[in-house]
Length: 100
Image 1 (cartoon, rainbow, N blue to C red):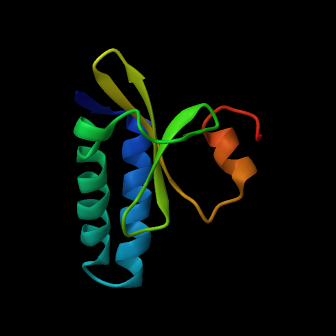
Image 2: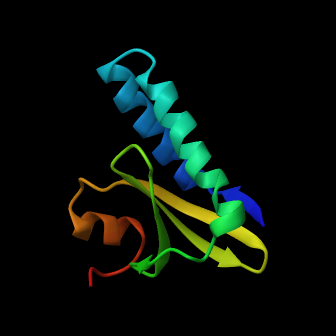
């Protein structure tokens, strides 16, 4: 599988990095390392995750974030990397779906 991180998901990762880096120096880098490792696992495990708001959802192993993705052929499209502490209605809106 090939992984493609969409620009909106890259923006989500940058926002998460800035937030955690503002909490403690080096924590932002750890956040990115963790999330990229979680994303890399999709090369083997894409498609096994539950579907939420019309997208597959991979839960981060260390942070309260989820990676929302689609599969198109042999390409995994990372659509968003969102903080799960947000209101589910906000997450649904961000993903372009109505809350279920």
